Length: 270
Image: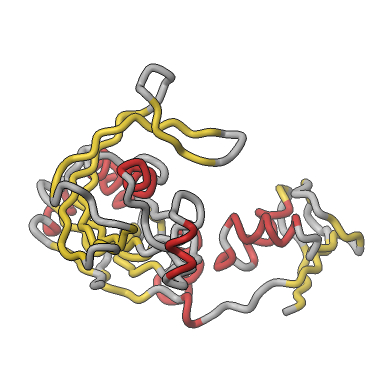
């Protein structure tokens, strides 16, 4: 749809559009600009330039889709637990839910194409406490992935050192001597048909793309993963969306006013 609005405050072009249409998310905003779908004061641009208050923005943007709207798993005065759909950035969830819940603050993240449980704070005090709880590993996350092939061991612990290749935008496994970050994930195979397996994953750390990279390094990439996956298998099974889902989050030893969450588990389902 074609939209037009006046910039309210100085900043980047992507930030100006994002403030008006928060459901788009950062990556989609930058793609819109790169694809030259945006005009600033009547001039088409392909750069994320700075704009000033009063500048006129015209753009062609995709309409919000009800299909992308997150399902609410749980809410109270402190938190909202949502089921993030695919093709949605975690940062965009607040905008998608703002009409019903007001300002929301994600306290952890999922990759844009990973679906499942995301916890959002409803006010800043809860945000600080929840972020601290995640850092201190008081929050347990469980994922489920469909993978190419079947891991040789039916259960185990993956320990790797991960480093980001900034030029290619990829994360890779290194030997630990080049500044990588230690990454640990326990896993368990829950079913297989000899060619495709389903595994549950219990990450002990939370690095960028950790589960996808570790599974690919193991030789069992996530089915449908367009970045680290087995492209021949993706094509064979006609899968275009990565089969990785955060299925549950549970809490223990929570501090202060969040102590009521102790022992609670929130499930997104398969």
